[in-house]
Length: 490
Image (cartoon, rainbow, N blue to C red; front, side):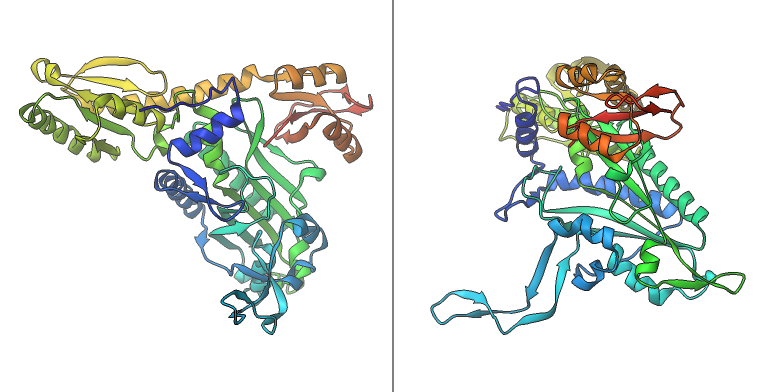
């Protein structure tokens, strides 16, 4: 199978685009800026959904669903929120088409909506308008709701999974009686995301807070997890927002507290999207194709028979069937590829491209010797193993691969996180060897914006549990009490 991938060192962006399409994850649709997620790509998203959904429910949340269309007037109720999304909103103005008499379908100008509807870019406004009817007393709190949905943000420059006009995500929206409870929820969900990224995606992340410039529109605080991709660019892998009482005040959501007094409700929202698939690709994959952590691989083990005749195939299939049954008991997903339309070499290349963690090949000689050949995708190592106890060996091997992929990504991040104390060094590091740069900042949005304009680097986060350290801002020389993480980002 000819993969023909551009190498990462030659053109990282082109490598990514080719890999997404050639590995059958997604493709551009006929609708500008939108993508078709193909079955193999969607199966990765389904595994992500399944794990996250359980994590949400284990922390007390329930799923609900809210409308795709939001009245335009809702957005004007929270000023900073509408400012944050105004340039990305798709708006429905009419509700009917008609034939113009010449065989053309046109918008019926007599079917104009009384109020335009915004296609959901995020759901805070419609949900808080709904919560007004759900909340009267402290006994109605907390509300811990999550929604799996699609959203539309009218992006002009798109890239599959990373930035498309429509994408899939989940958005949690919770309501609380006190600020302390809401902050606790915000931090809890950040930790859920970090746990998922590190233990399922094998992706080390920095937990932190966004600066006011980078905050979610309408939030008092935005917490985030930031990951480093192999090209040295950062990617925001999840956010959790403490919304204060902003949306409760905008939609007049009050409750009677335990003291019998009226107060506004405290809110959070949090979300991750299909851009996590982009993160998975860019953090781990190589010039041969995808490298998927076993925890999220749709196929964890593939078995390929190598045979000369039907008799050999029958004997190999009996061994394979026994192994498949044992692996399934261990909840390991396995595929037996006995297609006679493709040669073994083609299949090897196909599963390498698709990132299947473990490949088992069984041939005629293996029948005589009671062995199999095992290849691991993360390192490319091949070894001969006995058929006895193979299921337990593969189970351990998958754990080793998961840990190795994580450790490799962690080592890369460590090697590409540096300090800069002088602005010239800061700029040189960004150009020569991108990655995270820990540097002092004077805390002003003006300085942050100037650095962004100069270098295209943004403050990715102020790390939680950051060490206090006296220093001087790299741009202005003004006093600073801690370093923040800068990077160029997706």
